[in-house]
Image (cartoon, rainbow, N blue to C red; front, side):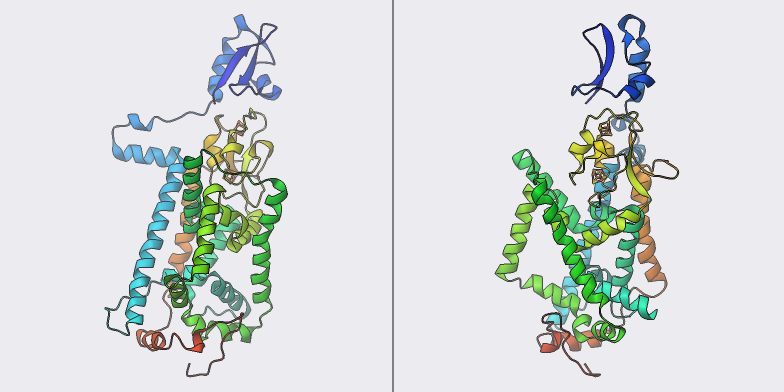
Amino acid sequence: MDLDVLRNRNGWREAVSTEGRHIPSSTRDSLGGPGTRTSTSPRVDTRMRALRRRRVDVQSMLSPYRRLVSRIENDPQFLRSTVQAGFALLCVWIGVEFHLFVKWGMSHGVEPFFSRPPGVEGFLPISALMSLTYWFQTGVINEIHPSGLFIFVAILAIGILLKKAFCSWLCPVGTLSEALWMFGQKLFGRNINVPRWLDYPLRSLKYLLLLFFVSSIIMMDVSALREFIYSPYNKMADVKMYLFFANISSVALWIILILAALSVVIKNFWCRYLCPYGALLGSLSWLSPLKITRQQSTCTKCELCTKACPSAIKVHRAKRVWSDECVSCLRCVAACPVDKTLEMSTRSSGKPVPGWVFGGLVVGVFVGLTGLAMLTGHWRNSISREEYARRFKQIDSPLYHHARGQTPPYGPDD
Ligand code: SF4
Ligand code: SF4
């Protein structure tokens, strides 16, 4: 889209976008009035150009370092993709390390020993929610999955401060979902827009799942929480999760394949409709002081922001985007062609937060809180190599079968 100045029937100049949408009168006023004589208005052209967002010509920079810094500063989507790729690689690394650890355990010590990566506890959100509830009720940070608790707290802190930025900047499932719908867009030329009458009820599904998990955990008293947290089942929950995927049943595999296929044609299908984590972060996002904010005075209503939004939010109609579906991806900001019109900003100061600062905050909060766990000795759990060796031998016993939400009974020696 480009802003243009066209002559109208009466011989007056009027500002319109190339998509044919009129620039609002307030903007036209700021450009020198609703109509300006063609012959006497070179000022209009100059001012219109001044409204355009300036694009930095990164390619013309000779130094690769300057090019990189300039891209990070001026292209939030480049920064976001880099952060996403970095975090996905970190998850792959954790996965490989954990695979080698389980291989050692399942071979009963025949394979070489690899220590268990604590980051794997980030994939145990229900256990982390129990740890958080237990921490609130007793003040004790349990030593079974302490890193899971700190990762969970870091994600909640991002939700409170920076909306659902975790989903679009860090979450590996969010990154995969985004890659799938972009692939679908390339393949079919577009993604399917789910009609509103179906979209709303589907979106409520993730909140129902969240309600189920939160209400079940909140109803547990301290002794029930302690019983679960220190149970053999919870101690080996990460290994059980690994074995679930390593020996996946055909039903589970079909479900995953269907979800992946739906994610190719519908943007962020899993995240938008089913992820309870997303529902939790969406609820917290209301508290965030930062929101996508649109300057109505300069907005041309070109709708490029709305077209760019993967969450189907009508950005061009909102003054501030309050939607719980906004994942803070900044795609709308990047799409807006008018300078200082669409920005992530606080209401109080109204000062825009540049993309690179926003990305730095997302990474900073996460690294800061997980780093705090490492510095305070709450990163590695207290289960020794010998205990793991013993538990791997029992992994198929009923002690490690979690049926219908019931923790299997266990004694002091288990
Ligand atoms: S409103 Fe903007 S930041 Fe929020 S999801 Fe849509 S494109 Fe991303
Ligand atoms: S805020 Fe949206 S509708 Fe307004 S000018 Fe920017 S992209 Fe166009």
